[in-house]
Amino acid sequence: MIVGQIDQLTGINFVLAKAKAYWELLKFRLSFLVAFSCAFGFVLASREINWLTFCMLFLGGFLLSGASGIINQIIEKDLDVLMGRTMNRPLPTHRVSVNEAILVAAICTVASVNILWKFTNPLTTGLSVLSMILYGFVYTPLKRVGPVAVFVGAIPGALPPLLGWTAATGIISHEALIIFGIQFIWQFPHFWAIAWVADEDYKKAGFKLLPSGGQKDLNTAVQIMIYTMFLIPMGLLPATFGITGINSAIVATLCGVAFFALTFSLMKSGDRKSALKIMFASFLYLPIVQIAYVLDKI
Image (cartoon, rainbow, N blue to C red; front, top):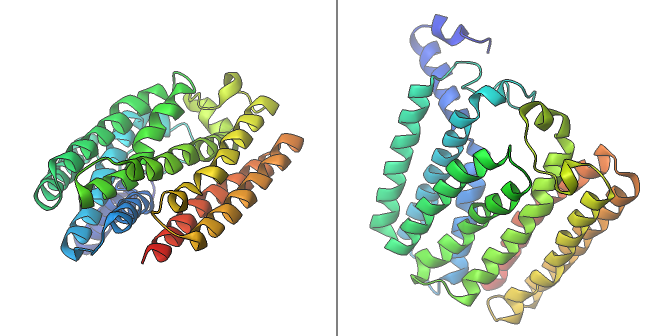
C-alpha cells in the first residue's frame, strides 16, 4: 500500500487495512516460530501434556515475541526506510503510527506476562521478560556496534525451548540447557547467512553483524562452517542424555551433515547464492530436528 494511502480509506476497507498492518507489525511467522519452539520444549519436558498450559504458553510466547518485534521496529523505524527488505513495513510506510505501535507492544506485553504468570510459573515469566529486554533493548542497538550483537541476540533467540521446559518443570535442568544450547549454536550460521545475503541493505543501515570486520570473506565463511559443524554433535545430546531416542538422533545427524556440507560451497566461492542456500537450510534445520525430537519422545 502507498505511504499514507490507508488514511484515505473508510469503513470496512480502513478496518481491514489497519488489521493487516497490525498483523504485519506482529511479525506473525517469526512470532509463530518462537511460540512453536516454546511448545517444543514444553512437550519434550512433559510426562503428560497439560493442554491448557500448552495453549497458554503458545499464546503467551507468541504475544511476547510480537511485542519484542514491535520494539525492534520502533527503534529501527528510520533505518528500515533505507533497506529494501524492510522499507514496506507498517512503520516506514506510516500505516501504523509510533504511538499505535507502542500501544500494541504494551498490550501484547501485559497480556503475555499475565498469561505466563497465571498458567506457567514465575521462572518462565521472568525469563520471558528477560528475553524481550535482551532482544528489544540490547540486541537491537548493538546491531550497529559490531558482531557482538549476534552473540547477544542468540541468547533470546535460543530461550524459547528453555522457556517451554521451565513451564513444564519449573526448573532449569541440564536437559533444558541442552535444548537451549542447540538453538543457541544454530543462531550463528543462521544470523551470518542472512547478514551475508542482506549485506548491501545492512550496510545502508549501518548494521555490522558479520564477523571478520564485517567482511564477506573466507574467515567469515569458515566461522559459519565451524558453528554449523558444532550442530552435529550437539544434535546427538538429547539422545545421549535420554531426553529422546535413536531415531531423532539419526534425523538430527543427517540434517546436521547436510547443513554442514553446504558451507563448503560458501568457503570455495564466497558468492551470495551459496549464502542463500545456507540461509534456507537454517530455516529448515531447526523445525525438522525439533519435530523429530518431539515425535521420538511421544
